[in-house]
Length: 61
Image 1 (cartoon, rainbow, N blue to C red):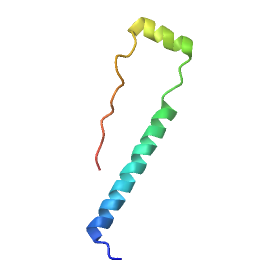
Image 2 (cartoon, rainbow, N blue to C red):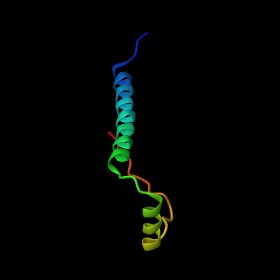
Image 3 (cartoon, helix red, strand yellow):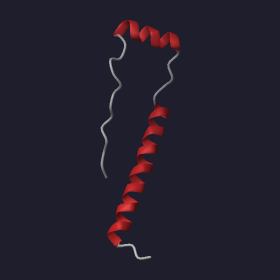
Image 4 (cartoon, rainbow, N blue to C red):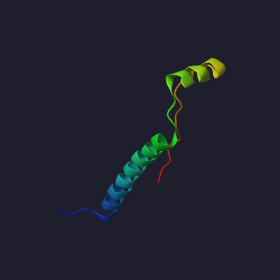
């Protein structure tokens, strides 16, 4: 089997990108504190409910 150098680079790049995306998600869940139901209710009463989910900017490598 003969795989070109460019194909190998592309595969590695895509794999690293996937791992980094997964790690960023894990990091966000670790950093963002948990909120109790009472705290969430108080936040929503003060600021309103979120209208839509936030979308996070995707970074390309």
